[in-house]
Image (cartoon, rainbow, N blue to C red; front, side):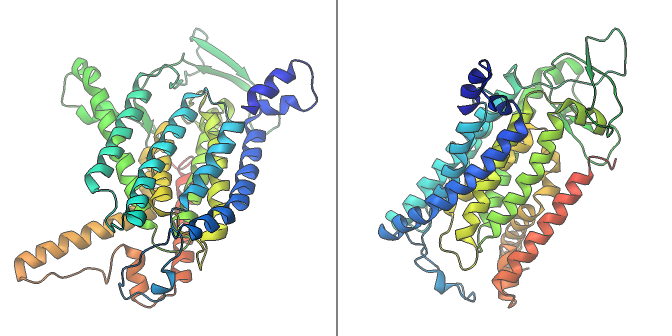
Length: 418
């Protein structure tokens, strides 16, 4: 909202008002504001949750230090949501379709997670919201996001044209410094497309049409929307549940998710900036640069929450936070067309989910075959396996953060390694 106020004031030459036209400036304000809000309201929300006895119920799984966490307030994801939404409303352009979809995702999955936590805490039902309702909520969000991306005229790309004089649009952009060679950039008009980024290959674009290659071209054009929406639904569901499973140790999901979104913010900035997109020879996505403001608010919110969630945690985010952050990461990546990079960037989420699936599948198979279920890991998700082996919780979390940073660097390297 402040963007519109200062844009108006800039007409009257109010000193400093023009700064709000710069995404980098508003992103800096967003991260500072979200940090202040999370630190300021965090203690108050924790005290309120204590007062209402909104404590975590702990099943005794034989893990070291586990029972010491009994009674620690949960639903701390409210701190993240408030610290994220308020700066975005203040500093982002809220008429931007990318911001709208990210806000819908935040509220949608945050509310679903809140209902799950509410049932666990106040209804004393450890199972929380039934799994089928969680899946229904995630699928519904995926359909909304998929249809919006496919149909909205504000979500487009511009293909690079090899310097042809008769091309549709000629954009003459010159870098302010000597980092980039000054030259004209020839782009097509705004184009609706189901293309996305494919890492490690020279022509690094993948069209969802390729998944139905066996159909005639006319039918591929007709049915690609269905393939795209199914892919969006799958990605949102998978990443959201992966974040949920990762949230099992103090600061683990919080730290990993902030690293992931920091990386996505880099991709969003270069993809939404015509000069950087041309220099790196990547897909230019108009209007997507605004998502950097959202990402900055997210980073500030999660880092601020980590102040209270680091070991020993004063509050847990609960499903209110974990479902929301997973969904945000998924939708963010889809919007900036980097979703195929998620298995690398979200490697921690992926491995945590895979460990659970392998454990369950192997247990069922061996029980059917031998009459007694056997396990691959001492316990799943994977972080509990290492905890069972006697590693201190802080060491496990720190090492998972290090792996997340390594994966983030590898993901960024894909900009140049093809």
